[in-house]
Image 1: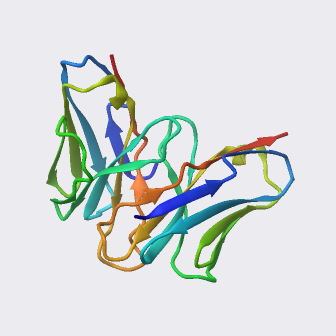
Image 2 (image 1 turned 45 degrees about the horizontal axis):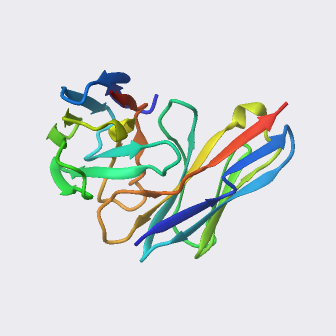
Length: 115
Length: 111
């Protein structure tokens, strides 16, 4: 256990559905991240939130919508996804701002399948 | 643009056979280089952070080293439980705090 939890662990959705992924960190960190991991590709950064403000979008399609209501919770709202969006979605958190403490700790991920 | 290249893509070793994994990187200014271990269906597990050339860190059978262009993850006398995918990532100075990852090295240790 790294102190970062994600729900659900598995999700199957149709292209017209709307669903949300949830991430919660119990480490007292002030930054949270969404990454996408597709087969045969490196982890790709999607969104960065620092002190609950989004600081990087990384050119992610608008069908992915993040929300960070407080420093412990992060959501990824999904709508009208495409089959190529099927992947493992990983959440991470870190303590930003102090050199030497910015290691990112990852949750177990949500395996998303879009039919 | 920051880039990370890991080699080999896959490595099969006998139990007890030591080896090294390579991570070559290009980054405008290195804030940190990170090694993670990832088991199938799980999130990456943090192993090491290295900040400057010449730095070394050890944990059990693993040792990570850093130069100005690459990092090595040395594995000494590995056991089957060391089988996993090992990921390398860099974080640049001055940019947002996201990590740039390599594709990983899939390591298999045979009994």
